[in-house]
Image (cartoon, rainbow, N blue to C red; front, side, top):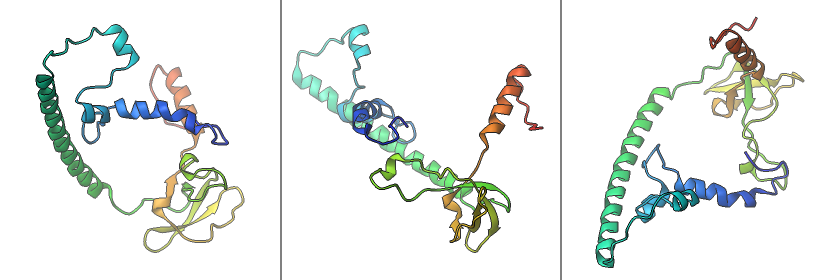
Length: 192
């Protein structure tokens, strides 16, 4: 998201991204930040050290270590329970959602990009192609025949639905936003 087009500044962004990941609670699974899972307390940021007064530390190191281990034990137990609950909920949601795709002939779609340009990282490039395709027909086993909207050239192999995403025209969002501000916050979904 923040890298340059030539992808040469990614290493300069790593420290900031890693600190953010380590200090952010994982609300989807464990409920705790990675830092707290390891050290038993939240990461102290520059903001914390300047504005929040320090806690008085126990003079007895043995008591402090015992308290830290007990805190870590509680955190890990709670994180394990949170993770198991989240996995169960995710499976239930997946089972409900997992069904055949709903693309129909004429739908506009984007194609997932699996190849990267030489010298550029696949992980740092856009996930979806900039070309817009349309569905020509449905093939066997949840596959589709697609064609490029600009050139009307067929995409040679059939494409699995997992590699397609519905295209949403940004112009529609601009019209809806403009209408919502004109109507006092009421979104007008008419595109006429």
